[in-house]
Amino acid sequence: MTKQEFLNGLRARLYELPPKDVRETLEYYGEMIDDCVENGMSQENAVKKMGSLDEVAAQILAGSSVRQRVTRALTNQQAKKGKGWTVALICVGFPVWFPLLVSAVAVIISLLATLWSVVVSLWACFGAFVGTAAGTLLLSFAYLFSGFGLLSVLCIGAALVCTGLAILFFFGCLSATKGSAKLTKLVFLKLFGKKQRRSAK
Amino acid sequence: MDIQLKRGLLDVCVLAAIRKEDSYGYQIIKQIKPYLEISESTLYPILRRLEESGQLTVRAVEHNGRLRKYYHITASGLARLKDFTNEWKEMMAIYQFVTGGKKA
Image (cartoon, rainbow over all chains, first blue to last red; front, top):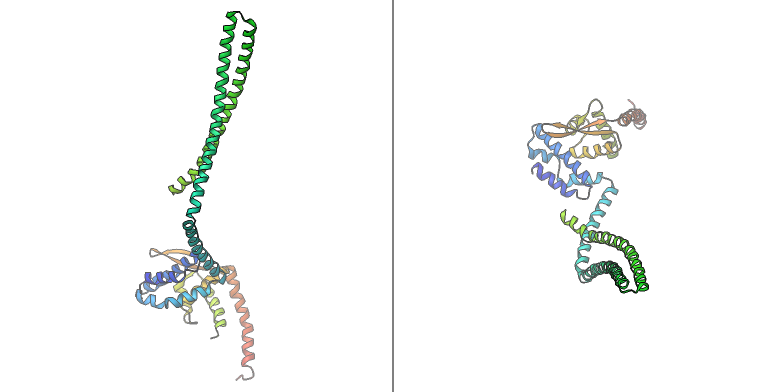
């Protein structure tokens, strides 16, 4: 057996130890074999001198604390079991989680669409107020030149009211748009940003 | 030799082997071999145990393009050796008692 074969065999037998302990053990035996070879022994004989793989491994495992080995064995088992179960659940649950996922995304997108339609209608209201203000102003001029002074004043009043409302709506619409944009960005980042980061890995 | 007794003696021998100067695995075995039967595989758990209990420390030194671990005795390791020599006086008394009466 070569040194490398010996170390590989030892590694395989120490799987229940923490990786750090395995590494240190392999370093120790590697060094010991190298030192034997350096002192004139053949690699074959140096490996033989270490004893049989099973004996060596048994001795090391007996020397490591029981707690270490138990926790290591348990985490190994759990990791194996956990992985198997997760994959199985993902496969079996596909008919359930896939439609749920799709509908959840659909709900989020429709909520966003609703939000944006509110924003659009707010802007439409703003436009309507501006339009009405302009219209009534024109009308007041028309009345003024036709000699209906009272009606003209009424129209000017209406135009002023509409302008005031338009200005109010303008600021309302602006903040609503900004808020919606922020929310949309956030939602899209949550939905797709993570996936992009994951696929980037 | 009794296993428990040998275990304790091996610990002390390893500490004694690195008392004067730091030493490495192969060298330690060579030093102890004339007195006690010791193999590469028995030395390893002893070194681990002594390191875990703080009686020696390990450092890696480059040697011929590879790393070799040198073991260095700590104050606690030295104290252990001192304890052993003190205990040995008691052991000698017990020895006298066990073999007692049949003194030549």
